[in-house]
Length: 251
Length: 251
Image 1 (cartoon, rainbow over the protein chains, first blue to last red):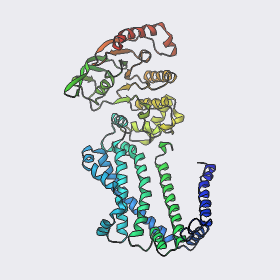
Image 2: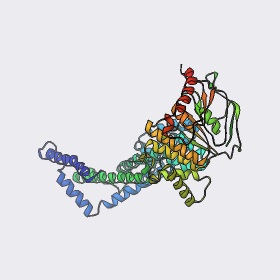
Image 3: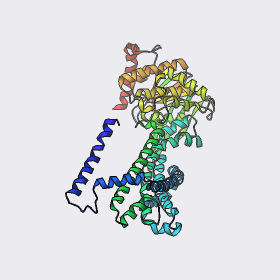
Image 4: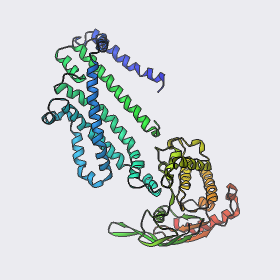
């Protein structure tokens, strides 16, 4: 994407801000419940220059990171096994599909029961969600590996663990990265929702919810916008990693 | 490598009945010979090739090689150029992968892969990824890779069938150049008469399913062959001979 295209992508954002401004100033909505963009942006600046938001961002990022990494540690090996062995796939297919259809956040009570109200519950819930997404994608990557190329490798006497290391892993990589991209965004969302509802004293979700309770509506919107920006940057990071890891996909 | 195909039969289970695909196929290939198996589509050519390669077992009959089965190295080139190369490896890396089982030294692998790339005329593309190459170039790399593997003999399963006519003519000449230089036995599968006549020393014509050997035709055109060969009367005579036998199979 060149500079010209990047500038183009700013136009809809500007239009939304103008629309927001007009809606508030025409008196169509209550300006207490939807403050004008100027107030919100001044609040964003304030949150950043006074550093008050930084610890919340860091806390949320650490929880997201741990949940995401935990998801990789659990999801990748299980996905490989399920992708390789048809029997194991048959054994767990239903369970996995069922579990991943559940909204992780609806299982609050269960996680609270096992992990208490600390960070453990939030991270465990994130791992639950991200590991399932990563598992399913890894599984499809391994299952759908190209059989012709596998045969070519075998005719070159690449067999057993070497076949896995040199061929199968790479076959699965594009699927794996698709899974990582989805799961990191969802990890971030799950952490924020968990921070809203499971007792915490720091984190972006806590900040949003707290601002709402005490009717600091400008602050609430400014934290929401910052949260969106952080989420966007996380996504960019994973796309960047993906392009470096699998340049051969020809993005 | 001298190869003797000894009354090979192959039946697949189809429902409760056995479906015969190959029916007592018998022929021989001399050391350094270029033999083409020619037959109607779906007659079991690929199955026969897989049996010769040891990837499938015949129901009856045997393959006689003058090396033990474990140590026999087969250079396989498959039909689909989309699947022939490992997409995550550069052109050079694809060839180096084929060398890994016999060469421990990385420098040595690089040197050899470059020399083969030079032979197929793709040294300039050494660091490109497969997605950056045309179909013909991909097959050329696959052929270079098969030669670099230094197999006892080659099995080529319609490697040019998906290419344009002009590309195909060029590729066939390149293949003959390599073959002339390295003097290795080639078993080539084709369903294109021009290709079969142009390339081979000998053409084995198979009937439709269940495949039997209809005829074995000697192609005594002088070598080296070029595009001029395709204009010789001898070329047309052999082509006619093949077509006369083959036409009973397409009725």
